[in-house]
Every structure is written in structure tokens, then in C-alpha cells.
Image 1 (tube, helix red, strand yellow):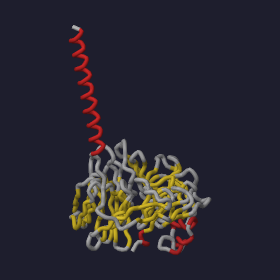
Image 2: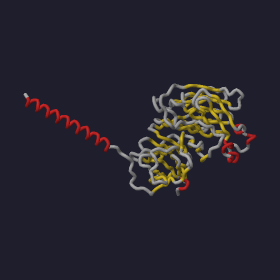
Image 3: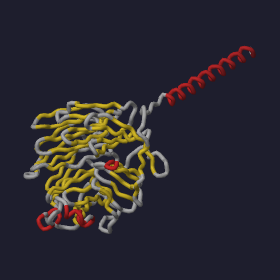
Image 4: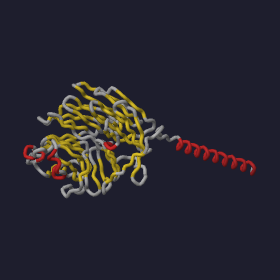
Length: 378
């Protein structure tokens, strides 16, 4: 009987040992199976050697705010000014104003030339007296939403709130009551790239947080069309929106559509980002592909970077640049022949930048307190 118990005990120990060995092998195999993008060769090191005094504290698709209150816009860095409201979120620049959200109580507008005197030298505010959008230095619009994105055209301000609400205000009206308001279905989670409303000639296109385009007349302030892009339950907000009076391009993380002369076209991929440039749409996908599409979303060129995690699109000197986040690479793709080069990145301390860009504009990548302008790279 004792011998039998001893044999059973030994058997139990053997089973336990085999189970542990199998689990260890599984864990080792699982960790070893993780794949990362590895370029065949690199063109050298791209050094993020330019910096500003304070790191980035908050960012969105259209701008960023530094810890010291300075701003980064698509046109560059705006040093801190006492006119920049404290404890406010920077939403972006539009229609001659820098736009801020002050909590969930109001939206605060500061005329561009107050913070940047060069604004009167460009087309936005060339003559103050003739441009009503630039006639008031500061404006505050009371809201009942936590504004996530905003656009201005003339005296009209269009907002999208975190509760998937949409509003239009006349910033010159004495009462500042909304001319239009609508609340879509509730959402639980959104992608960090939140598109801003798009003004056309007599319409405003709202990119909703639940994967739709709500098109509203700016003459009657009533909805004219509701376009469903995709119907995912999570992370289904519109992440990209561009258009004019003849075409509209819009993307969610699962689908890209174009509407051209009343016809609708679609491109079904897991989309990371998109950019319209010189007649073509450039799309990054979650599986490491860069695609060049025409206005009907027909692929013209594609390049697959196996296992790459791509983020950000900047264009300079007929070259598209994107950041590979796992390895800290910048991939440069020539727009004429779609050939590519790969650069390893470092900051001034010899470290690889963290695996996420804080902000990217037309030709610049920013992270933490460093940046690189690709206009320098020839």
C-alpha cells in the first residue's frame, strides 16, 4: 500500500513537471513569436536635433500644447502668450482664430494675429476691417458639451462634443445661442484622431463619433443628408475628413469613402491614417501598408512593410515620410516611383524616440520636446 502511494506520488510529480515544462515552453514560444519590422538596410541616422523649451503636454489631430502653454500648429510653434487661456485644451486653428475648449463649459476663441502678428500678412486676416472673423480679439461661447473638435467659416462656429453632439453657433450674434444642435448615439470609446467639421459653400459636414457624416445646410440649419461610413461599436469615429464642393473623402478606422459628383466609392481596410495630396489619397493601414489611391479609391501604388506599425504622414520634396513606431524608423517613400528609403532615428542623447509621435504637421514630426522638419532632408 505504501509502495502504491509512493508510485502515485511520483506520477503526480511527473505530471506536474510536464505541465510546468509545457507552460514554460508555451510562454517562451509565445514571446519568441512576436514579429517586428526589420528593414533590409538603412540610409543612416536621422537626428531629432531641434527642440523647444518645454515638452508636449496635450495633442490632437490639429495641434498640440506644451507644458509652458506654448502652441504647436500646422504652421509651426506659437510661443506662450498671456492671451492663451490657462487650463484649456487647444483644439486647433480655423477661420482666423485659435480655438480652445475651457472644460465643458465654453469654447474660447483668440484671433490669430493676437498671438501671431504675421497673420495679417496671410490670406486669413489680410485686412482686419474687412474680415468679420478677425474683427474681435477674443470671444467666449458658452456650451453644454465638452468640445473635441471645431471649425470656423466666416461667423459660423461648428463644434463636435465628446457626447457625440454637434452644434453651430453664430459668433457675431448677441445671444450666442446655437443655430443648430443635434446629438447622435452614445459612444463608449473613440480613436484619438478626431476629425473636425468641414465647411463647404452652403453646407457643414459633421464627422460624427459613431461613423457617420451628418451634412447640415448653413442656410436653413437643417440636416440634408446622413451618410453611414461604418457601423462598428467601438473606435468608430471619423478620423479623417477632407473635401470641397465637388468631392468629399472621409475615413473611420475600418473604412474609407469618397463622394465624387454624387457617386460614392469605398475602400475597406483597417486604416491608421489618411492624407489627400495633389490629387491622390495616401493611406496607412494597421498591417503596415502604404497605399496611393485615386479619387475613386482605386489603388495606384501600394507598398507593404511587413510587421511595421506606421504612424504619421508628412510630405516634403515629393517624398512621403511615416514613422515606424516599434523600431524607431522613418520610412521615406518617393511619390514619383514609390521607391523607399529607411532611416534610424535618434534624439540628441542618442536615444531612439518613444514609440508614439505626439504630433505631426505638413512636413514636421514632433515628439516630447524634439522635432524634425523633413524639408531639411534632400
